[in-house]
Image 1 (spheres, rainbow, N blue to C red):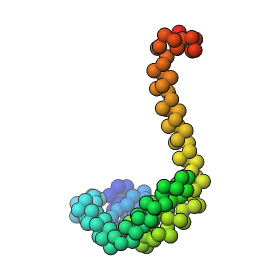
Image 2: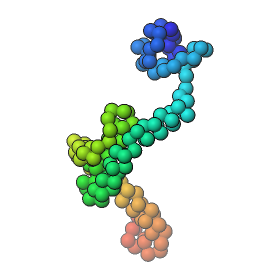
Image 3: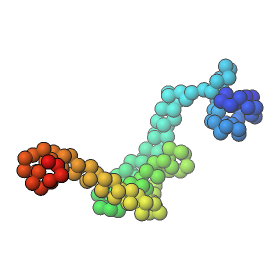
Image 4: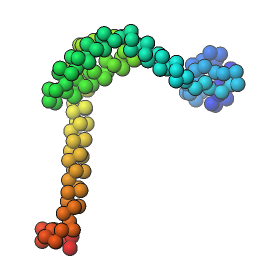
Length: 146
């Protein structure tokens, strides 16, 4: 069989091309790579959701109870996201303990959020200073603007 992207020879039924690294998936009779069928993907998502509904609801309720805690909420959000990703990848079920197991990435996430908050404050201050610049009294405070 030929890779539809790089045209190199690969094994029949290969999922990934060993030459270019492209994901092959199903190949149609025409030899072009098959695109994902939205209905199949959506149905797969609904099936995962139905099979894990009770666990996901419990995880979400506990998450809502603890996420209000300042600064620690960064770790809880990471744990919640990790748990939902684990379920979507079919690597296990959602467990309440997953909320409390994301502290390994807490310093990085906290720094990321802190930088975003600082940037947000700076960007919100720029329009304020820009709006007072044309005022007549502003030239006495900011001589470079006149």
